Image 1 (cartoon, rainbow, N blue to C red):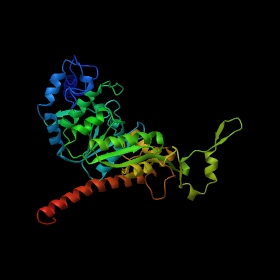
Image 2 (spheres, one colour):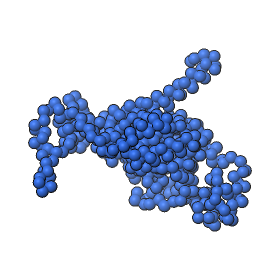
Image 3 (tube, rainbow, N blue to C red):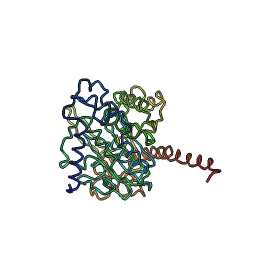
Image 4 (tube, rainbow, N blue to C red):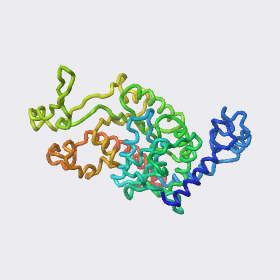
Amino acid sequence: MAERAVAEYIMAERALAAEVPADANAHCPGTSSETAGKSEACAGCPNQEICATAQSKGPDSDLIAIEQRMRNIKHKILVLSGKGGVGKSTFSAQLAFALAAKSREVGLLDIDICGPSIPKMLGLEGEEIHQSNAGWSPVYVEDNLGVMSIGFMLQNPDDAVIWRGPRKNALIKQFLKDVDWGVIDYLVVDAPPGTSDEHISIAQFLKASNVDGAIIVTTPQEVSIIDVRKEINFCKKVGIPVLGVVENMSGLSQQLHKFKFFSTRPDGAQQDVTQQVLQHLPAELQNCVAQTEVFHASKGGAEQMAKDMQVPFLGRVPLDPLLSRAAEEGKSAFGSSSFEGAEGDRSAFGSSNLKGNSRPFMPSLPALQAIIEQLMQVTEGSEDKQRQTNGVQNGGLH
């Protein structure tokens, strides 16, 4: 890490430590919290009166700085999930890639402090944060796609971030206040799963910044849907619109020639019979897409849940090995050269491709494209309506 970035990281660490006084109670909410001096955790703390008094002195200057910084960003979208492991960060990464591919200026902010996976999914492992007079500079994947994550601050990517809530909150505030995104069209915020400190902080810090809303990612089974209901209720309580729900890992879809086939012997041993099966399968059928359900949606999955809770359902994205590979390699699923250069990969690059198709077939791609088109219609459609309203108020449409 560059010397200047190291110095800034040390300064940030000191600032984070200053959020919690040395003699504070075990569960101190932090001096900048709205509940400082007022929560149950503050009872008996020697700093309780000071913190409570400080909260009444006026608006937080950092919140004003955040609001000013956010003025340069047209659309702010949060990507949330009730449970971990549902593909939320993969969706965030591909959403950012897709918006950038549509010539939008895009920022991707990773606020998953303890599990930052965005640097890996954007192909930015080992990159550094640099400081300028305007603030922290994002790390750029493309000229129009910048990324910020605590992952860029860790000297070793395997280092554990063991922080209490106030320290996490302070870093999120610093990201929002000090990162110089410039004038951009979209800021996509990848949040950790659940409804914990990070979620409360981002809702509080962006309260005055007109957040477009949240996308909530889930898998079909009820054990995931249960937590999504909590996530939706959280959004309603803090005033964040729900742009829609995405059902990820919605079945496994693959072309037949990409499957392996096995026969099972009486002793339970399996024998690979893929070649024999494909030889008996007409060539015109080998590109047919086979689909099977992986997770049992016992109560109708995300679509029924969204209907019950009166929020939009954006669509289903199937399990797709190539989408998983894109995340592993830090590539976009939308680029024409995303999977070039892997010799011998029969499943992606051999004669298995559809005629006239120079890239592998991805079952997840049409679903992702349809979902992102819906999001752009909602966000940019509201922008067009606002321009029309302003035009009418000014004497006519322009």
